[in-house]
Image (cartoon, rainbow, N blue to C red; front, side, top):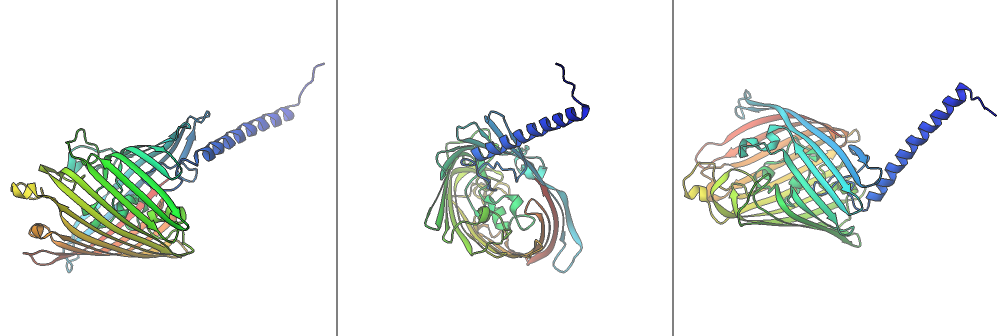
Length: 417
């Protein structure tokens, strides 16, 4: 017996089949996400992979052998420096794509292996003007999760130094990090890194360490000296919402007070660059020691952050050899403090004070600098999409020259997924 089906019934059957296939794929993707959750971080920390449907685009192999999260972000800015504190004529302008980055995070099978890769495409973000070549690769890390609390990584990534450096440039409440960070941070390096976290009751703590080349990122060869870095973080009032101790501003409006106190130490044996892992190449190597103390606290929209940094060295080969005037290791100390409040409409007002003091032997070459900054940010999608406006006063005091002050205004738009 032959049965004839009407056109309407055929269309209904085809639509049901399409819906079933789509639903199956969605459910399968969520199963993969929950399978990966025990070994993959779900929050924005640069020293580990992020696989999450609420960030970027997620792709998963049907046999669960591979997972990929794709994100991008760009920072477009315009700024101006005045001639002096009384002459408001423009000394210079800044108008550029400050950062343009593509980030990949993922996992490989059920082996506990995860990866994190970040590429930069703007010239200022590649360090071209200092190194002479485009440093496209910023991060290239492979991680292995031994337990829920302990994992290790190998590759090129951020060292566990000062907090403001570890906080992503996309999670800052000002258009850029402070001068203290610009001068003293130890940035990225290639090496082996280890991370451990645990708690005693509600008291959380994090231990981080690294043994690295000491030469910085994108280096082809190194000498027989290594860099040794360690960091400790204490959270006596419990963890922040979604690791909020590694983003600036209280975007999650912590319902109870939270605080994190951190300390880091780094020894770079036989460093060959003026800032340790960064800067120009020195005529001879020198040992560089860096130390950091920092704190961040948040409560109901208020956020307070402070850092102290110092650097010493075993010698100044650039000064001893009377080489180029910029071939010396910047030694000294600096402090940075920030206070902000986030209004219910996701507009934030913030203030920052920065002070950098060079070591006595460098005060003929480097001025003492104080910077006062006021900032306003409007967050469209947390830190991923935002508008920022900063006003700063820079006060530089030199031993042999008159005080030099000027004003700076900076506007930045950040867009990303």
